[in-house]
Amino acid sequence: MEFKKNDVVTVKIEDMSHDGSGIGKADGYTLFIKDAVIGDEVEAKIMKTKKNYGFARLMNVLVPSPDRTEPKCPKARACGGCQLQFLSYEKQLEFKRNKVDGNLRHIGGFQDFAIEKVMGMDDPWRYRNKAQFPFGKDKDGNIVTGFYAGRTHAIIPNRNCYLGVEENEKILDRIISYMEENHVEPYNEKTGKGLIRHALIRYGFTTKEIMVCLIINGESLPKKERLIEKLTKIQGMTSITANVNKKRSNVILGDKIIPLWGQDYITDYIGNVKYQISPLSFYQVNPVQTVKLYETALEYAGLTGKETVWDLYCGIGTISLFLAQKAKQVYGVEIVPAAIEDAKKNAELNGIENAEFFVGKAEEVLPREYEEKGIYADVIVVDPPRKGCDEALLTTMLEMKPERIVYVSCDSSTLARDLKILCGEGYELGRVAVCDMFPAGVHVETVVLLSHKKADSYIHIDVEFGEGEGKIPVDSIAKRAEAYKPKEKVTYKMIKEYIEAKYGFKVHTAYIAEVKRNLGLPMYDAPNAVEELKQPRKHPTPEKVEAIKDALRYFAVI
Image (cartoon, rainbow, N blue to C red; front, side):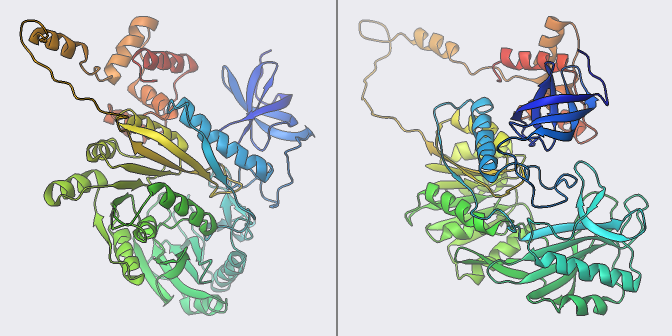
């Protein structure tokens, strides 16, 4: 049967995609349905069709799954922030465990491993210490704030997000009251007019300190003292600032911070380590789970007090200072200068003297410090962004040959890709743990221990080259060397030529890059393809996807 847009179908949900959508079939046709969970039987309206699959909107749950739960938030379906509120928390953890396990097996090619623990929360609500609320107007002209609907910039009004702290609602009420009373307009993305773009709120779970930073489309706030008067009545208010962002882009924060009242930072703790946190600081959003995550990283690092540790992508030094408690020396590297300044302040704040920080690219800083100063690494801890590690950094890590690598990842697909490279060049996958930093969301943190392979035993062999009995002819050495030449590097050109010869059609470089990206593979051979992917994505047809995968299998890339 051929389906078209607006057809209503009955679907039994049998699986879930990486983004939390339910997956089921109608007469053999695969449909992805947001807010449906495994075990549901649902009525859905088809919204978009492809040749082999389509997307549908959940209309009615005919037979609910035993794992379905009523969402705590009344805006759960409309809001784009929570993808898994309809799934019981036990099953959310199972979904995330399976996600990590599947990526390590299918992308990384690992089979002989086990996830030793999944760290969930006793209470998976009100866990976020940071929230960013966009401002706008509804159809009646009222000022609203909340969160964007999924895949849009349409604001779903919601001042009481159950993932954030209760104080957020009080703060937002006062900001909107100030705006209405003083005729301060919210920012309009379409016109580029209006002043208030976002409110960034941070909360110290240990210190109870509160930060409010208003992102503004200008250089000042009118009648700011009236806003300050309202906000300072909230217990714990410590820092009120403005952040200037006059660019017409989706980037939330600008570079300039204007102090309005109090400090320009708040403080909080991870374990017994104290940190200063500014509006621009990267700081883990779930402090309860961060302690579990870092304690696991520390355990995997196996520190005895004698080790030199490199912390790559160190940010404001959160992991570095945690490790410094057990290491001989810790070196942190981060490309953002402001983050390194914060890291140095945090080391001083805690009286930690065995931590040093460098500004720059890790793949440049590490070899420089090794060559110039002989600084090596017993242990490397790496916590990259979702895109994973730069290829040059992986090469540098392999050259330094630390005893252990602890990889902390917020994206298990790029984690698996990078582990495949590291474990192909002298390391073996040891321990794996999963930490749920984002209950109700689809993202998950993973901690992995890699250990440098060592020979089980050694034997001594005397070899004599030349002609005659018991000697090894030199020409046989040459033949063996020829046989063990490294494999030719697989280029995009080779893939394109293979496909054209076998299938009779051409594929765009950006198509290959897109398929590699979806498989979690690196795309280092074609910088032009990467640049093109910064533009609107090119999506190859299923026929071309299969041809590209065939080529990747032919060249032993996958």
